Image 1 (cartoon, rainbow, N blue to C red):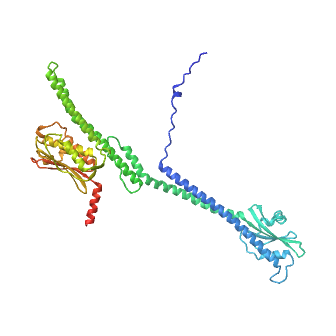
Image 2 (image 1 turned 45 degrees about the vertical axis):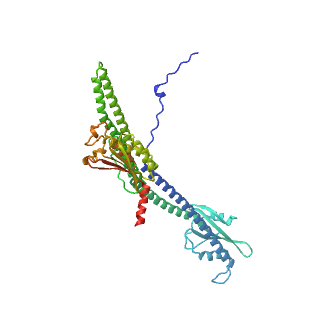
Image 3 (image 1 turned 180 degrees about the vertical axis):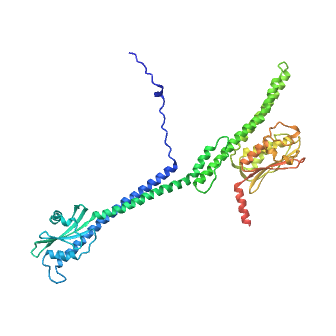
Length: 499
């Protein structure tokens, strides 16, 4: 039995698209969360307040009922008319006398029911529906319980009764006190309604204020976002104005610092490309020109062309290595600091310099103690200075090396007896591809003019600087200065102690 593969449509084989998430601005989220939290807090306050007020109203009603009932019991127990000093004739007279003396709240009701079922209301007060509903009064009078709750059109009515008995123990009337608790609850609800209205107004004001304040707080963040949107690889000069000392200002400072590092990195990349294209063009042109003019019939000419091409390729290799070194000089790991013995470092450097050429090498001074340096980079810088000194001196000329330390810095110097440096070349020789007006000793143009740039990069990576002292015709002295933070602090303390 053969089976056929069903052709699945192209659309059905495609991976399902991810739903695009709806972006909610941070300003809206802040306002929504603040309003939501405030709404929950106000709602909780309203509910708790209502429950407390209702519970208090119910408690007050119970206390009022109990108090009125106790007062009537005491009055009935006494049983003496204060006006005539005679006992009351019956329960009706007792009820009328006591009820006429009462001053009640609006929500409180006092009445009596005689043994014959006649209602004795309080004079001067409109008897509420309870007085006209015999069935309700009958429910209260016939109820075995001393207290209870009766449902009326005005809401629940809490009541308490005190039965009256004559001297023979027969029923002679009933004293009834009631309290319209729902009226109190309605007043509580009106109060809560007012509180809710004020809360709604407060929520609206809070939302408006939070919208404005969050906008002001997030404005620096929006400035960072807008600046990031305007930044491109061709223009990294955009910066954010820092105002304040809060976390947002710190973020702006960090962002500006990141832009500085990016600008330096892209600048170093562009400079590397510009320098490479500028400096490598000449040896490539020389190699191509010699190869094009080379004759296949003359072996001697071929050997000379190969030699010239090899020299140019070696020079290109040195240029590329120097450019790569300069490009790496701005990386944070370009120098690796460690505690170095200055005696050992100076001695090692002096031993390596003697192999650079037949000169009269002199070790003028050796610093003692330790310093925090990168010994490999420091050696590289001093060797480069000594190599330049060899190029600008003759065989047998003196070249002096020395190191010294102070409370604030460590210094290495190389002094030669060559032609020196003109004043107008003092700054130019530290630039890339610059050899100064001398152009190298004896017309030596083999270098690319990057040696002193490398020296400067190494020293600046240590936080130091290069000093030059020279008189034309009397030689030059290049000094590398490496500051020491701990030593600087000690030096400051020494000066304070002396003062």
